[in-house]
Image (cartoon, rainbow, N blue to C red; front, top):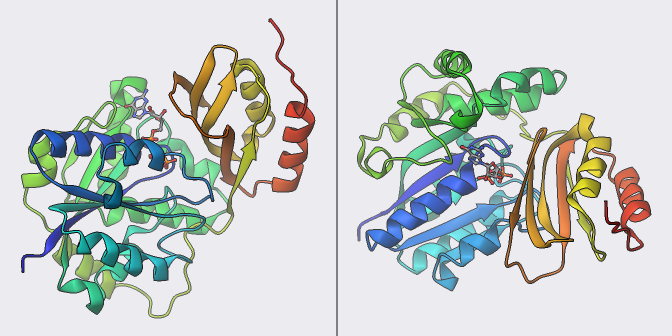
Length: 322
Ligand SMILES: Nc1nc2c(ncn2[C@@H]2O[C@H](COP(=O)(O)OP(=O)(O)OP(=O)(O)O)[C@@H](O)[C@H]2O)c(=O)[nH]1
C-alpha cells in the first residue's frame, strides 16, 4: 500500500497558514486531488475550520482544539490521523497553531502506528514579512517563544515569506537575512496572500526526513518543552450589535499583550469576519450563521480582566450612529 504524503504547514500566529491551506485546497480541487486536513487551534473556538470544511468532503477534516499539538494534545493527534488516513486521501495537510514547534509534531506523526501509513513530504513554514523582525522585542522575556519561532524556520524544508505587499524591498532583504541565519539550505519564496506555485510545493525535491533526523539528533534528551508557555487565549461571545470602531477601540486597550484576534461579529453593516494580526485589523463580509464571538490570543493575557471589560462594554446594545 502506498503511503500518504503529509505536508506540515507551520508559521507564527497570523502569518498566512490558513490562507496558504485554502490556496492548496483550490489547487487540489482543480487537479482532482483528494485532500484531507488536520487543523489545530490554541483556543476552544474553531474560527478557521468552518471555512476550510466547506472546501472538503465532510469527513476529510479533523480538528484538535484548545491546546497545541506539539505539547498537551499529542495523544489526540494519532487518533485524528488514523481517522483521516482510513478515508484514503491522496494527500494530507496539517495546519499547526502559530506557536507550535513543528519538530515535536514530526515526532508524533512518525511513531510506529502511523509510519507505515504516511510519509512526511515537507515542513512548510510561512513567515509574516511585516512582523517577523519585531517578534524578538515583543517576546523579549519569553525564551520558549523565541525558541519556537526560530525552530519553525530552522526545521522548514520550504520557507515562504508572506505579506510582501506590506513591506519595502529593504525589509524583504532583512527578513531573508534573518531566515538564512536560522536555515541556510531551504528554498525561500516571497508571496502575497500565500500565493504559491503548485510545482514549488508538490513537486520540488524534498529533503525533510534527512534534515529533521539530523536536527533531532541534536536535541537534548528528555528536555521538557512547551512552545507556548505564556500564550493565552480567550473566546468572548457577542450578543449585541456593535461597530468596527468599538471593537478596534476594545482591542487597542489590550494591545500591549495582544498578538492575534479573530472572530465573527455582528456590526451595523451585517455579519463580518474580523482578523487582527499585531496592529493590523481586517474586516470582511461573511456568510457565517453561528453565534458571534471574538477570540483573543496573547502573551499573559489577563483573561478575567478582559472578560469583565468585554461584558462592561458589550453587555447592552451600544450601537450608535457615529
Ligand atoms: N495584506 C496581506 N494580508 C494577508 C496576506 N496573507 C494573509 N493575509 C491576512 O492576514 C490575516 C491572517 O491570515 P491567516 O491565513 O488566517 O493566518 P494564520 O497563520 O492562519 O493565522 P493563525 O491561524 O491565527 O495563526 C488574514 O486577515 C489574511 O487575509 C498578505 O500577503 N498580505
